[in-house]
Length: 133
Image 1 (cartoon, helix red, strand yellow):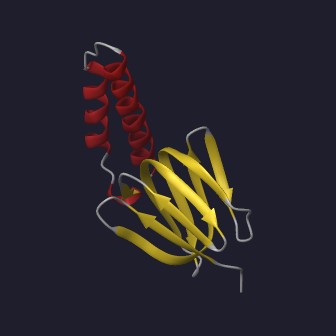
Image 2 (cartoon, helix red, strand yellow):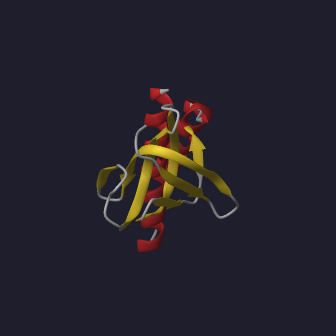
C-alpha cells in the first residue's frame, strides 16, 4: 500500500474535504507544486487554478481553487481557499461571462485596477478548466 496523508480542504463556510490521499498537485501564486508523503513542512500562497489529488483508492479528483493558502505539516495538508468547485461542476458559459465582465469593467485607481486584474485571472483559470473537463 502506498504512503498516504490527510487533506483538509477548507472554505470560510465549511470543511469540504477531510480524507486520506496519496498525492496532491496545485497552482501556487508563482507556479505549480506537487506534494507526496514525507514532504518537508511548508506554507504556500495559492493562485487561481486547479487542485488535483489522488485519493487513497487511486481516484483522481479535480477542483478549481480561488486563491488562499496551503500548509504541509507532518502528514496533513491544509488548503484554505475562498471557494473550491469540483471541475465537473464548472460551466464554460458562466466562466466566459465572468471573464467578459472583468475585461469590460472600467477601473480608476490602483485598488480597482488590482481587483479587475484579479477577477480576470480568476475567470481565465475557470474558463481553462471548464474547457478541459
